Length: 120
Length: 108
Image (cartoon, rainbow over all chains, first blue to last red; front, side):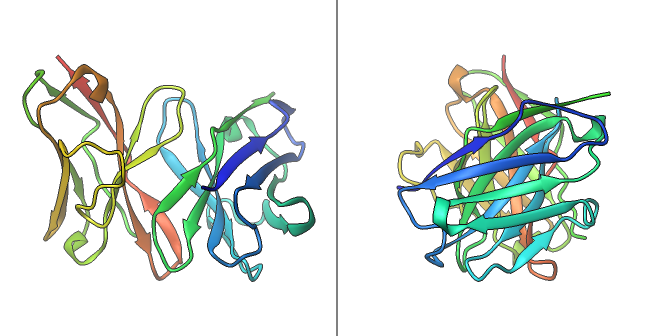
C-alpha cells in the first residue's frame, strides 16, 4: 500500500517561489509502477491537475501554468517535488500529490493535502 | 481540451436514489472514474472504469456511461453520502487527467 505525504510552507508571499514535496512510502518512486502527480484545489473550487512525472523522468504540465512549473523526482529521498515560480493569490489552494498506476488512468493513491496561502 | 460538465448541486431524500451526471462529447467512448470528497479530506475513488467498485465501496454506488453522459448512482442514500463528487477521464492527446467541475450532493 503506497502512502503519500505532502509537505509545504503553508504561507508564501506573492512573487516568491512555492516549493512542495511529496514523500512516498510503501513503494519505490523509481519502480516504474506509478506516475506521480500534483493536483490542487482552490478554496471552494474543484480539482485542477497541475503536473506529472513518470518513472523515466518524463514530465507533463498543465498548459495554463506551463512556464512556472517544475516537477522532479528525487529517488535518493523517495520523494517528488513541485516548484511554482512567481506565485500570486490565485495560487492559494490545497495541493495534493497523487499516484496513477502506469498504463492506468485514474488516481490510485492521494496524499492528505498541503494547504498553501499566498499573501499579497 | 476535453471538457466535462457536472451539475453544481444535487439534492435527494434519505433512502432514495441520487443520480449525478457527467457530460462530455462522446464520453461513452472513454473510461470514466468517480471520486467522493468530504470536507477537509482528499478525494476517494468510488467508481473506476465506468462502473467498477474499488474494495470497500458499498454496492449502493454504481456507474454507467453511454453517449454523451456518464452517471454515478447512489441508491438508498444516507447522510454520510453528503459530499462533493467529481468525474474524471484521461485526455490521451495531452496525456493528462481531466476533472469535471464537481457536484455537491445534499441529503434532505
